[in-house]
Length: 316
Image (cartoon, rainbow, N blue to C red; front, side):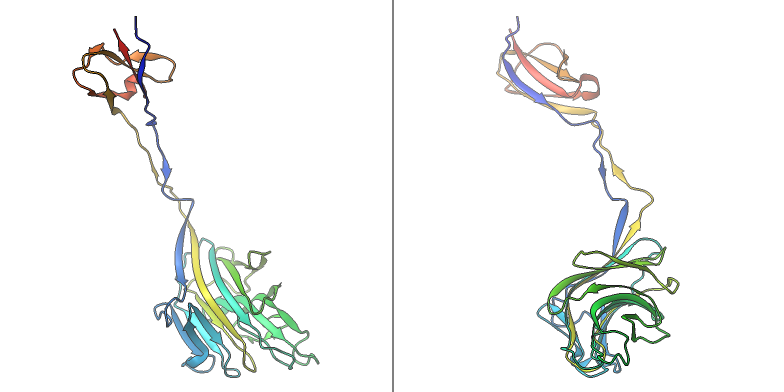
């Protein structure tokens, strides 16, 4: 009769198939990323200038991990422009920035902040204007504006603000302004449909469709402070531009195990039987009863034949 002392039970859960996706349905391509951690702009990513002068001077400055774009000369504020960004014809482009905007304390006619973000290729642009306009007599503007306005513009026409939107283009909508505090700004562009979106701090999205046809060439990302008077500025802590490019084939990895080594720790001179099972219910001996000649015995077993669960019995 068997001694029902269960000396060792080994459940070998190797699995006949182990699959892991090496990529998701979208492959994200990083087009641009910068956290402005140095003491100067990365010249491989950016160029700086004023609206009217090639020399940016003090209108664009890097310090303490942020870049500041300011209007320190009337009608001649700073412009910060990225290198050309090449993109695929399909796949959503997402632009994210951590920014801080200071609006000049208005009250004077024609005081506004155009310290926004735009994405364009030199012939058109879309983006957000951070605007604070006070025109009490409404001589130049039909309404006072204190908002972040999202729209597009054909640069061949005026770049001025028209009824709270982009002159010569579409005013897709406005978001409540956030002055003198850090916030997260996000814009998206779908090259296949020309659909664009804008949101602040993860809030509701303003959506629209570009007026001009979607360009085929590279795009540039621009931050600027522009307008009359001085004193307004925009600080950027970080910026990233990524594109989700669909992949036609998702590679996988599969692992199939045919043989394993089963190590048995036993007592010298005692008799044992090694059994295997496919379901932990029905057990079959993997070989004849044996007498242990050493304290450690290793057997190589074909798991496709024996099963993947093992136990060892001591017998008389």
